[in-house]
Image 1 (spheres, rainbow, N blue to C red):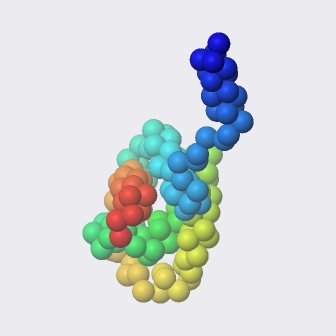
Image 2 (cartoon, rainbow, N blue to C red; image 1 turned 60 degrees about the horizontal axis):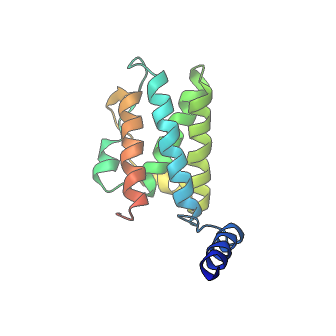
Length: 140
């Protein structure tokens, strides 16, 4: 009888007490959404769109300049190409991450060199995943 009561109390406690959220950091939340949207975009893009290469920014450690730059590139791409819903969502999530991280992209982009190399947009998307994962793990 005591065992049944203990089991019942345990069940009720689990129902009443909310489960811990894996991360309360809004920036991490945004990065996970960014990764999900990149995977969706990757499926819908062929290698037909070419954008500015950001490999130097990735090699430099995926700092704020990287996120500001890719947001800017994708925002510009939206203006000139008929974009898909997934890409628009990705741009929105990047903006949310930038805002939650208090980045001042206007200032940050003044220090970022423009690349003369163009690469397929799928390479840019892979770099976004790579840098988002680095940031999620806290590697700067």
